[in-house]
Amino acid sequence: MEITKKNTYPHFDEIWTDALKDLQKYGDDFVPTPVTMSLGDSKETWDEGECGFVSINFRGNSAFSRWAKQKGLAHKNVPSGMYMNVSAFFKYNGQGMQRKKYVADELCRRLNEKGIIVSVHSQLL
Image (tube, rainbow, N blue to C red; front, side):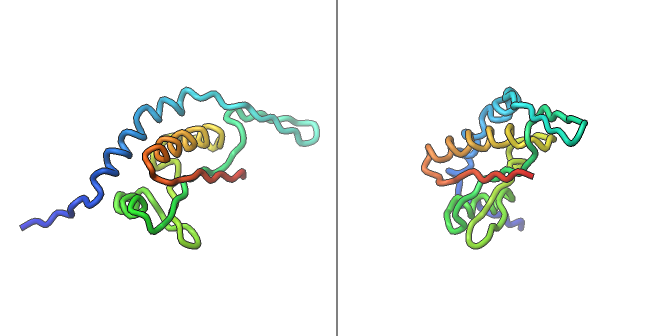
């Protein structure tokens, strides 16, 4: 007899699917502001903007955090929260932070509209 784990948070599956709808295209269509840096006589331009990390943060003791952890999307954050890397929902190979933040802001807006309290955290390298 095979035992399967019951999905105890089925409404989050639907909310998550709706929130992700067209999000990849939304991010792919974004045009970041290039950044040019100079060091002495040389200049370098990065078309994708500044490099950095972006994550979605939320309380660790919420039903959404338990669901996200169960799905393998969330990780423990210090001291008592959870976080989700942008790469968990947006496939982007670059290091540019602008595009990732743009997508994360939109996802947070969509989830917050459904009553799921999440926020964006970004950090420049």
